[in-house]
Each structure stands twice: as structure tokens, then as C-alpha cells.
Amino acid sequence: MYSRNRMKSFNIPDFYKSPLISKVKEIRKISDPRKKDFNPTVLDFGPVRFFIARHFGFCYGVEHAIETAYKAIEENSGKRIFLLSQMIHNPDVNDDLQKRGVRFLMDTSGNQIISFSELTPDDIVIIPAFGTTLAIEEQLRAFGIEVRKYDTTCPFVERVWKKSEKLGEDKYTIIIHGKSNHEETKATFSRSEKNAPSIVVKDINESRVLGEYILGNLPLAELMNVFNGKHSADFNPEKDLLRVGVINQTTMLATETQEIAEYFKSIMLKKYGEENLKEHFADTRDTLCYATNENQEATYGLLRQEADVAIVVGGYNSSNTSHIVELCEEKLPTFFISSASEIRSKNSIRHFDYLNHELLESNTFLPEKEKTDIILTSGASCPDSVVDAVLQKILSFYPSVKSIEEVIREVEAKGNALA
Image (cartoon, rainbow, N blue to C red; front, side, top):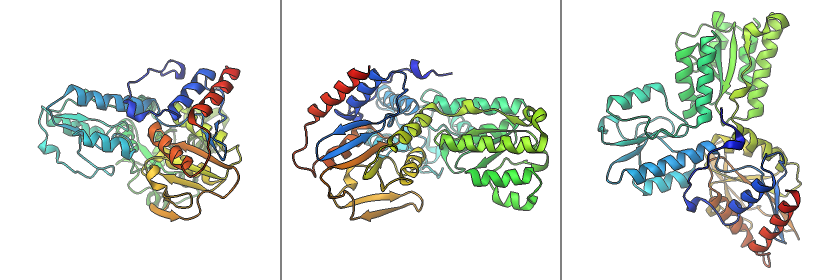
């Protein structure tokens, strides 16, 4: 078990840090070491004010992956170095690794870019933070690759795998809350189906389909149509849905995973009664990723503030970033961007529609006001330097702003008062 207050510190390249954002995080860490305050940090530059989330950016698992990847490059000069697929879902990190000679074996959908048959035992293969399937691990070993040496799988993902193993030992069927085509879900599914019958639910709506079948209100054919390709090979709903436990893709909304788990608990309670509940439902709350949960709690803290717009920075294929966008969009105009280059002017921005998977152009971006309030945050795989660049780009549109040094002094003064 990993304690939030005893986390290892990782050696992250300085170019991923920033003079402002990283400093603000350090101030908050000192003033709130137990991470109890989810209110945002206010950066008041005069004509524009930013509300910065209490928690955002690189999490424990991402920092572990980045440190390991750069260590692999440093330790293996002259050798061919490959990433199984994207290290994390952030274009800046992946682009920098490629510039240093690292090559991708697969894309994020699992399509082969370079055949495994081209690998030799002298090659280095880095396993990404999401982990990989047991079948791919076996393939790599068959070509003489030392799989574990540079395995950057997030410890919290591995914790979910261990929970699936325990559920299997206790004869529970495993319900995975996740996106069936996501690398992490594929990796988790490959382990859970080895231990027990397994099925993937995308959201609460798919969960209700499963629940209605359990209660006898849905035909088998309709159930199997909804979950075609999302269950283990020998899945038999009639006998495999008598005992269930819920685990999750760690980047999904923690609140939604909890809602899904509570839903299945209520289904089993309704069907079997309070006295038999433990025989039919496993409590799996300890599989939720602390970092994902804290980032989402920090987003809720952000959204208690009144603001004109929200800007969420991150990779467009990042699951946890899209969930933060989803939360922000419920309250105010939200722009999902990958970098400062997407901001063309005070009025023009290119941003990502994560529901339709397309880039949009908007010509109504920042309002013409005496003081503009902006919510600014990012996903767990986004470097502070990228968020800093976004903030700096926006500041360039406003005359007579306070200096960064002055704003940092104000944040420090407030932090010292709270410490």
C-alpha cells in the first residue's frame, strides 16, 4: 500500500518544470502538507486572474514512468530503445522521447508500428505507465527482451491487478469500469480474465443493462449484444453474475466508479437481501487511484469559483483529462487544448471536442471585461511547463499585468499565513 504522505520523490527533467506553476505547487505543499484544502490558488495579475487547481499535472505513476524512461536512455547509450506504446498520453513527453531516439512499437490502439520480430535480446523495451497485457509480455520474452527492467507500470494500476487476483481467488466475477479499447483496461482485463470471469462496463448506463439482467428483467441475447467483445471467452451470465466485485481503469471518474459499485451493491441487496449481501458483492473501494481522485476533487474545488472560462490542458487521448473537461463543461465555457500554440489570439483558439474527437475553432474566447477570471488546470500526464506556457500566452494579451515575482510573493504570503 502506498501512503500519500510518504511518497517517493522522482527525478524529473527540469524542462518539464516551470518557474511559476511548479513554484505554486511547492508553496501549496508546504502550507497544506496533508492535502486537506481543495480550494484553488488565486494568481491575480490585475486585468486577468487565474484560479489554479490544488492538484493537477504529473501524478506519482507518471513521474515514476518518466524517471524510468530517461534512466533507460541514459543507461543504454548506443543501444536501440523502444517504447511499447506511448509512455503516457501527452504529446510533449512522447515527442521528446522520440527526439532522443526512442521508437514506438505500437500505437495506442495496439496496432503494430514495428514488428516484434525485428527485436533482438540486446534491445531495450520500455513498458508504459498503463502496463500491458500478459500476451504481449510473453511475446516480448520470446524475442529475448527483459520485460521487467524498464517496466514503468503505475503502482496503482498494479494494485488493481492484485485486487482482481484476490477477487478471482474468492470466486467473484470481475466487473471492470473502463474503456474497453484503452491500454490500461486491456492490461487489467488480461489479468482479471485469467483469475475469474470478467466483463467491462463503460459507464453507469451499461451497468444498468447488466443489473437488469441480474434481476431477470432483460433477455440474455440483449445483454450479450451490448457486451459483445467486452467479456472473457467463457463468460456465462447465468452462473457468473451470482457474485461480483467492481474494479476500475484508474483514470476513470472516481465518483462514477463509486456510483457503479453502489449500484451493483443495491442490485445484489435487492435480489439476495441484507443477510446474504457479502456472499454476492465484494467491497473494492480500495482500488480507486488517490491521484485521480484528488485531481477530480480539486476540480470540484475549482468549480466552486465563479469564472468566465475554463482551460484544461493535456493530451487529446488522455482519459483523465477528458473527465476533467467533462466536469468543467457542466458549469462554464471550457476549452480543451494540448498546448499554448492552440491559442491564436485573445479571440481565437483551437480546441478539442473529446465527444466527437475533432478539433474546433472558436472566435469567442476571452471576454472583453475589466477583469477576466480564468480557471486553469491540466490532466495527470501534462508537464507544468506546458501549463505555464498557456498562462504566459494569455498574459501576453493583457497590458500592464503584475510581474510573476510579485504574484508569487502574494501567494507565498497567503501560504505562510495558512501554514
